[in-house]
Image 1 (cartoon, rainbow, N blue to C red):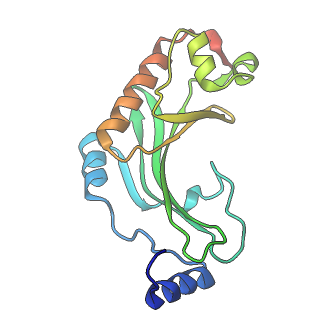
Image 2 (spheres, rainbow, N blue to C red):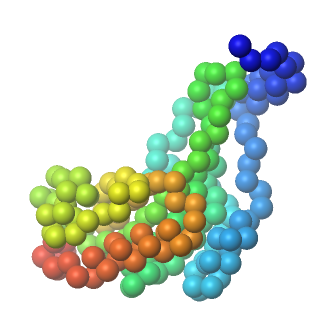
Length: 178
């Protein structure tokens, strides 16, 4: 059984009652430098992404989310957006924040209907490729591939971008709808 801590209990109750969480308020120097070194755009606040790729959290006390550390650019002629997402939710008196990263790649076009009927990993395999296994991927209409994972290192994101964009460049044009 854990130690009783009035401070911990009151802090948790206050956070749940206000629906707040500690927000990321400073740019991450590592991501800022990475974006700068590649000529990408970096912005701390990603609130414009709320509701675009993930459902908004239920509107009740204790639930909140923040999008931050947004990097936008082009890798091997493929536009992409990378961002981090912090969520807080649940009925517990001391909800734990959850962190994830997302990578959105613009595809050469909307995938054909038969590819859309498959999970992206199966579609890439059917075309002779392979998606990284460090995260999960899904189609996002009309012509985006959305990947999520615990990708908090720029070199890891570079590897993922390189892997997928080279496959997209080599993919036959008939995989995409006009």
